[in-house]
Image 1 (cartoon, rainbow, N blue to C red):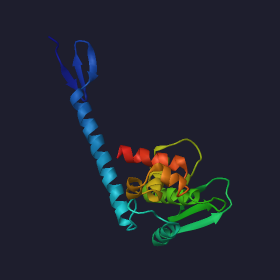
Image 2 (image 1 turned 90 degrees about the vertical axis):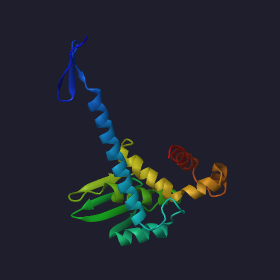
Image 3 (image 1 turned 30 degrees about the vertical axis):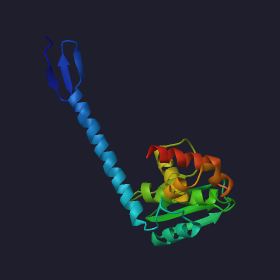
Image 4 (image 1 turned 30 degrees about the horizontal axis):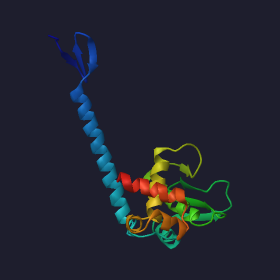
Length: 185
C-alpha cells in the first residue's frame, strides 16, 4: 500500500511527488470557465456592435459606421503591408493599404477592427500588423472575426462553396476557412 501526503498541488507517494489529479481537474475547470467567460464577453461586445455581425454580410459602409461610432481614425494610403491597427495616447487608428482590391480590402478592414475590439489595451501603446509574423492567437481571432463578417452563418448555410467562389468571386481560401470555422462551432 502506498502512503500519500500532500504539499500544495502535489501528492507524495512512495515513488516521489506527482501532480495531484484533483488539482489538475480544478485547473482545467478554472481554465474552461475563463474561456467561457472570455467568449461570453466577446459575444456581448459583438452584439453591442448592433450591426448583425455573423447574421448578414457586412459592407465597407458598416466598417466606416463602426469606426465613426468608436472614434477610430481610418487612414487609407499606400503601405507595404495590407493594414494595421494602432493605439497611441488613448486614440485608435486603422491604416489600410489603398492598393488592396475587394474582397481582400474589406477582410483587412474588419480584421483590423477586430484588433481594436478584442485586443486594444486600456492604456499604453499597441500596434497590430496584418500579415506580418507568425499566426498568433490574436491574429487567428481577428481573422475569424473578419471571415464571419464577410461570410455570415446564414450565407454559408444557404449557398454552396462553389456558388460563393464562382458567383460572388470570393477567394477559395476565405470560403474554406469559413467552412472550417462553421464545422468547429
